[in-house]
Length: 114
Length: 112
Image (cartoon, rainbow over all chains, first blue to last red; front, side, top):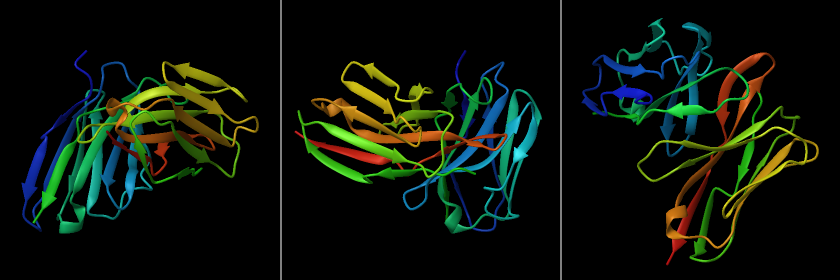
Protein backbone atom coordinates (compact mmCIF):
# COMPACT_ATOMS: atom_id res chain seq x y z
CA UNK A 1 0.00 0.00 0.00
CA UNK A 2 1.25 3.49 -0.81
CA UNK A 3 0.21 4.86 2.54
CA UNK A 4 -2.05 7.83 3.17
CA UNK A 5 -2.02 10.10 0.14
CA UNK A 6 -2.77 13.79 0.37
CA UNK A 7 -3.06 16.36 -2.36
CA UNK A 8 -1.96 18.93 -3.10
CA UNK A 9 1.34 19.03 -1.19
CA UNK A 10 1.42 22.81 -1.35
CA UNK A 11 -1.34 25.31 -1.92
CA UNK A 12 -1.10 29.06 -2.13
CA UNK A 13 -4.34 30.93 -2.44
CA UNK A 14 -5.73 34.38 -2.01
CA UNK A 15 -7.88 35.35 0.91
CA UNK A 16 -11.54 34.70 0.18
CA UNK A 17 -10.94 31.82 -2.19
CA UNK A 18 -12.21 28.31 -1.66
CA UNK A 19 -9.62 25.66 -0.83
CA UNK A 20 -10.14 21.91 -1.05
CA UNK A 21 -7.69 19.46 0.46
CA UNK A 22 -7.88 15.80 -0.46
CA UNK A 23 -6.99 12.57 1.27
CA UNK A 24 -6.91 8.90 0.34
CA UNK A 25 -6.60 6.72 3.44
CA UNK A 26 -4.96 3.33 3.60
CA UNK A 27 -7.27 0.67 2.21
CA UNK A 28 -9.14 -1.18 4.93
CA UNK A 29 -8.70 1.49 7.57
CA UNK A 30 -11.93 2.39 9.33
CA UNK A 31 -10.84 5.69 10.88
CA UNK A 32 -9.81 8.89 9.16
CA UNK A 33 -8.55 11.98 10.96
CA UNK A 34 -7.93 15.54 9.81
CA UNK A 35 -5.38 17.64 11.71
CA UNK A 36 -4.07 21.17 11.47
CA UNK A 37 -0.54 21.97 12.62
CA UNK A 38 0.81 25.41 13.47
CA UNK A 39 3.70 26.55 15.63
CA UNK A 40 1.36 28.29 18.03
CA UNK A 41 -1.32 25.65 18.46
CA UNK A 42 0.52 22.43 17.71
CA UNK A 43 -1.27 19.47 16.17
CA UNK A 44 -5.02 20.00 16.45
CA UNK A 45 -7.61 17.36 15.71
CA UNK A 46 -10.23 18.96 13.48
CA UNK A 47 -12.59 16.08 12.72
CA UNK A 48 -12.56 12.33 12.44
CA UNK A 49 -14.64 9.73 10.64
CA UNK A 50 -15.48 6.14 11.43
CA UNK A 51 -16.63 4.06 8.48
CA UNK A 52 -17.19 7.27 6.48
CA UNK A 53 -19.41 8.80 9.17
CA UNK A 54 -18.26 11.99 10.91
CA UNK A 55 -18.01 11.23 14.62
CA UNK A 56 -16.63 14.37 16.20
CA UNK A 57 -16.20 17.72 14.46
CA UNK A 58 -15.79 19.77 17.61
CA UNK A 59 -12.28 20.72 16.56
CA UNK A 60 -13.40 22.41 13.36
CA UNK A 61 -12.59 26.09 13.90
CA UNK A 62 -15.74 27.59 12.42
CA UNK A 63 -18.38 27.23 9.77
CA UNK A 64 -15.93 28.09 7.04
CA UNK A 65 -14.49 24.61 7.47
CA UNK A 66 -16.28 21.49 6.26
CA UNK A 67 -15.21 17.90 5.71
CA UNK A 68 -16.75 15.02 3.83
CA UNK A 69 -16.02 11.37 3.30
CA UNK A 70 -18.22 10.16 0.43
CA UNK A 71 -16.65 6.72 0.39
CA UNK A 72 -14.04 4.64 2.18
CA UNK A 73 -11.21 5.74 -0.07
CA UNK A 74 -11.64 9.49 -0.23
CA UNK A 75 -12.10 12.48 2.03
CA UNK A 76 -12.01 16.23 1.54
CA UNK A 77 -11.48 19.19 3.82
CA UNK A 78 -12.85 22.43 2.45
CA UNK A 79 -12.29 25.98 3.59
CA UNK A 80 -14.61 28.61 2.18
CA UNK A 81 -13.80 31.46 2.28
CA UNK A 82 -10.15 31.09 3.25
CA UNK A 83 -8.39 33.59 5.52
CA UNK A 84 -4.68 34.23 6.22
CA UNK A 85 -5.02 32.71 9.69
CA UNK A 86 -5.91 29.40 8.05
CA UNK A 87 -2.31 29.10 6.86
CA UNK A 88 -0.95 25.87 8.33
CA UNK A 89 0.02 22.34 7.47
CA UNK A 90 -3.02 20.08 7.23
CA UNK A 91 -2.53 16.37 7.84
CA UNK A 92 -4.78 13.48 7.12
CA UNK A 93 -4.28 10.22 9.01
CA UNK A 94 -5.98 6.85 9.07
CA UNK A 95 -6.03 3.92 11.46
CA UNK A 96 -7.29 0.38 11.28
CA UNK A 97 -9.66 0.66 14.22
CA UNK A 98 -10.52 2.88 17.12
CA UNK A 99 -8.64 2.26 20.27
CA UNK A 100 -5.37 0.45 20.12
CA UNK A 101 -3.91 0.85 16.68
CA UNK A 102 -1.49 3.40 15.36
CA UNK A 103 -2.39 6.25 13.06
CA UNK A 104 -0.62 6.58 9.72
CA UNK A 105 -0.16 10.12 8.50
CA UNK A 106 -0.02 11.52 5.01
CA UNK A 107 2.73 13.89 3.93
CA UNK A 108 0.51 16.89 4.65
CA UNK A 109 -0.67 19.88 2.67
CA UNK A 110 1.07 23.16 3.36
CA UNK A 111 -1.55 25.87 2.90
CA UNK A 112 -0.64 29.52 2.56
CA UNK A 113 -3.41 32.08 2.33
CA UNK A 114 -2.23 35.52 1.23
CA UNK B 1 -12.17 14.92 25.85
CA UNK B 2 -9.07 13.98 27.73
CA UNK B 3 -6.07 16.24 27.53
CA UNK B 4 -2.43 15.68 28.21
CA UNK B 5 0.32 18.07 29.24
CA UNK B 6 3.70 17.48 27.64
CA UNK B 7 6.96 18.94 28.93
CA UNK B 8 9.39 20.41 28.19
CA UNK B 9 8.35 22.29 25.07
CA UNK B 10 11.95 22.59 23.87
CA UNK B 11 15.09 20.71 24.85
CA UNK B 12 18.60 21.53 23.71
CA UNK B 13 21.20 18.86 24.29
CA UNK B 14 24.74 18.19 23.24
CA UNK B 15 25.13 15.16 21.04
CA UNK B 16 25.70 12.17 23.29
CA UNK B 17 23.64 13.51 26.18
CA UNK B 18 20.42 11.91 27.31
CA UNK B 19 16.95 13.33 26.69
CA UNK B 20 13.61 12.81 28.39
CA UNK B 21 10.12 14.10 27.62
CA UNK B 22 7.09 13.67 29.85
CA UNK B 23 3.35 13.49 29.37
CA UNK B 24 0.96 14.00 32.26
CA UNK B 25 -2.79 13.60 32.47
CA UNK B 26 -5.24 14.43 35.25
CA UNK B 27 -7.29 11.36 34.39
CA UNK B 28 -6.47 7.70 33.96
CA UNK B 29 -5.54 6.78 30.42
CA UNK B 30 -6.50 3.56 28.69
CA UNK B 31 -3.37 3.71 26.60
CA UNK B 32 -0.85 6.19 25.26
CA UNK B 33 1.01 6.39 21.98
CA UNK B 34 4.25 8.14 21.05
CA UNK B 35 5.08 9.68 17.69
CA UNK B 36 8.12 11.37 16.19
CA UNK B 37 8.03 14.11 13.59
CA UNK B 38 11.22 15.04 11.78
CA UNK B 39 11.60 18.66 10.65
CA UNK B 40 9.46 19.15 7.55
CA UNK B 41 7.98 15.67 7.89
CA UNK B 42 4.87 14.04 9.24
CA UNK B 43 4.27 12.28 12.58
CA UNK B 44 5.40 8.67 12.60
CA UNK B 45 4.23 6.16 15.17
CA UNK B 46 6.86 4.90 17.59
CA UNK B 47 5.08 2.80 20.18
CA UNK B 48 1.94 2.22 22.22
CA UNK B 49 1.76 1.56 25.96
CA UNK B 50 -1.26 -0.11 27.48
CA UNK B 51 -0.43 -1.72 30.81
CA UNK B 52 0.17 -0.03 34.16
CA UNK B 53 3.90 0.32 34.82
CA UNK B 54 4.77 -0.90 31.34
CA UNK B 55 8.31 -0.31 30.06
CA UNK B 56 9.26 -0.84 26.44
CA UNK B 57 12.59 -0.31 24.72
CA UNK B 58 13.54 0.39 21.13
CA UNK B 59 17.34 0.52 20.89
CA UNK B 60 18.27 3.77 22.65
CA UNK B 61 14.64 4.74 23.34
CA UNK B 62 12.88 3.73 26.56
CA UNK B 63 9.15 4.29 27.02
CA UNK B 64 7.37 4.10 30.36
CA UNK B 65 3.74 4.14 31.43
CA UNK B 66 3.09 5.18 35.01
CA UNK B 67 1.64 2.83 37.58
CA UNK B 68 -1.50 4.96 37.82
CA UNK B 69 -1.66 5.25 34.01
CA UNK B 70 -1.72 9.04 34.29
CA UNK B 71 1.76 9.76 33.00
CA UNK B 72 4.28 8.52 30.52
CA UNK B 73 7.84 9.27 29.52
CA UNK B 74 10.19 8.80 26.62
CA UNK B 75 13.91 8.65 27.35
CA UNK B 76 16.64 8.66 24.72
CA UNK B 77 20.10 7.54 25.77
CA UNK B 78 23.14 9.09 24.14
CA UNK B 79 21.36 11.25 21.59
CA UNK B 80 22.48 11.32 17.99
CA UNK B 81 21.81 13.91 15.31
CA UNK B 82 19.26 11.56 13.77
CA UNK B 83 17.13 11.97 16.91
CA UNK B 84 16.35 15.59 16.02
CA UNK B 85 12.64 16.26 15.74
CA UNK B 86 9.48 16.69 17.75
CA UNK B 87 8.23 13.93 20.00
CA UNK B 88 4.51 13.74 20.70
CA UNK B 89 2.43 11.69 23.05
CA UNK B 90 -1.10 10.97 21.89
CA UNK B 91 -4.21 9.45 23.35
CA UNK B 92 -7.68 8.49 22.37
CA UNK B 93 -10.32 10.92 23.58
CA UNK B 94 -12.08 8.43 25.79
CA UNK B 95 -15.69 8.49 26.88
CA UNK B 96 -16.63 6.28 23.96
CA UNK B 97 -15.01 8.55 21.42
CA UNK B 98 -11.92 7.50 19.52
CA UNK B 99 -10.42 10.74 18.30
CA UNK B 100 -6.64 10.70 18.59
CA UNK B 101 -5.45 13.88 20.33
CA UNK B 102 -1.84 14.95 20.62
CA UNK B 103 0.17 16.73 23.25
CA UNK B 104 1.99 19.92 22.26
CA UNK B 105 5.17 17.98 21.65
CA UNK B 106 8.78 18.36 22.77
CA UNK B 107 11.18 19.80 20.21
CA UNK B 108 14.56 18.11 20.53
CA UNK B 109 17.47 20.19 19.27
CA UNK B 110 20.88 18.54 19.22
CA UNK B 111 24.12 20.49 19.12
CA UNK B 112 27.03 18.55 17.65
